[in-house]
Length: 505
Image: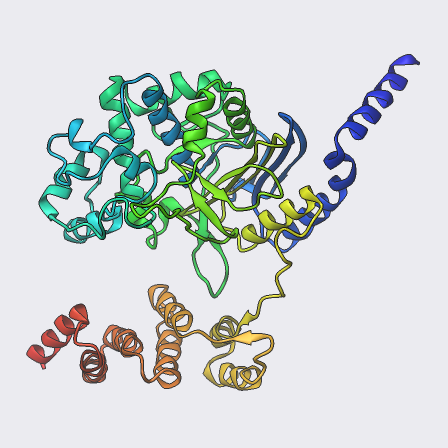
């Protein structure tokens, strides 16, 4: 009879020593119940205080086709939160005296074509380098099977001879390519592969048993699948591996590591924060260096304001300007199929982590609401209920009942600007989705209406021309492409199609 009494005593002690657990648990559950029901969050959330989990919840599915639900052990690709690990690895080498942050990259890579860029510039996103899309998309356009790798970066930079966007240290511009070069630096100086270095010098010391670099081990049962919306007019999901929309990122650029590609769990990320606090990975002086705002050449702070308010930037971390809360460091991750949020308050040893594997529409709201509840104050103002798309119900009605019924619905709702919005790009993309899915008649109707609603947009005529051409209506397609090219002579693909149509006419 003593054992149940002891259990309740322990439970009572947990509640009084953990205010978040006692006071916030019910509100957090209510928040995620709502998000789950509305399908606006699909993943895991964890809140920790003083290295103890005070709230943990798994929502939705790790694999939709099984269906297999997310659990506390689910391992997600964490996207750009990987940059915080790359920065930690580089600064470990700085701490050992093997690298200096103000060393030029040419010291380690003599072929690197920009002599004034330093290690610090890469760590702080102030290098002025082109990003991975600017560098590699032309190569992918020329060869759809081209695979970019870290080793191909410097040769590609040399061949492209692209000028820097600005003088190094002069501006802030988010840059993935720089962190891929930093991963090469870690390999060059340590003599280890980046995957091995992370495992030996970060994951093991931090006790992160479920974390690894993507591709360094076989996919296990806990690694979740990332999903994106396939048809926006149906809001259905497809795995990123089979999505044509994101193939460049999920296939052609997938091998680039350093800016992304770490797989981890909410529990392991909590251990990473704890290991940093305990100086298991970096000493206090080096942590201060990492968490100190970067200053431009003119002495001003880099202040890349974003979705979560005013923030400066250190070396691999965003530094929110919320001094009333404590010393905060954070990073987010957004890549096809995955959203990640990592927030650490070292003053209170408080960590908030959210991982999502379906690019859920409520992810940003979830992050802000969790922080509001955890801190017991309105850090982020509650956003008004967003307007709904008018074109989504219009497209659904067009498919279900035809153009007349869709036009009636459109005319009934278009004056309700309080609840509905219209966006040219959305209607254009929905029409092209219909075309790709072989709903040719509905696609032509939608894209025709796009030209009528937005007659000043060259792109609407280009898209409608594509639908007409696919239907074999060459004369009408020629008229649309001609209109598009006249409005925007820079539409080179449309110009080529128009030239071919004229030749064959």
